Image 1: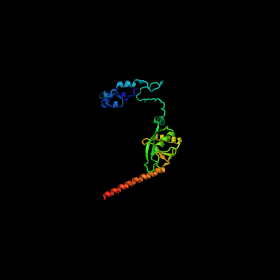
Image 2 (image 1 turned 60 degrees about the horizontal axis):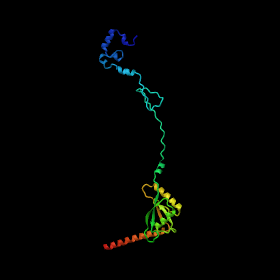
Image 3 (image 1 turned 180 degrees about the horizontal axis):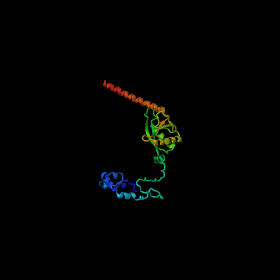
Image 4 (image 1 turned 45 degrees about the horizontal axis):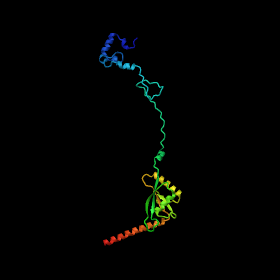
Length: 237
């Protein structure tokens, strides 16, 4: 027995139903579409064939490992990705690389005073560039000759150009003192970026004489300025 209620009607009733309600039977699924809608709603056989065909098997991805069967190329199936494991890169030794690239410091600059043993003379300074591997005997002879001092009576101290004004002087009297000064100076040069690093030499015996010379020089400059201003006032008068 048919489940379609339209089949229970007589042929005359079916003809009358189609005449009065040409689309109602199609809406409820009991009749085929009417002639004016048949072409528009005719099912596409090619789509039906594709939907009924078995899904094609896709080729395995190049990242898929061996032994994994290929997955069907279903439009709704999620893509599967496989991640390769890579060995972590070794940590970069920044400090070691910088130490290897750093240029070795072979010389240091010494700021050496002159005229420290002459009363009334103006104390000046000059630069003396010496190798870092110099012996203390050679260093002492060169320094005393540059400062015009007796090597047997000279007492030398030093500071660095980066020290503060109130920092104490360091002694420079033997080989160990020289090595400490050179090692410290090399470290300052390595860390310096723009400023020039110098070992500032001081004559400890003539420190008071240096102050006397400096005071004498300042007084001389002040006196000459005073005399110049007095002459200028006389000319204006």
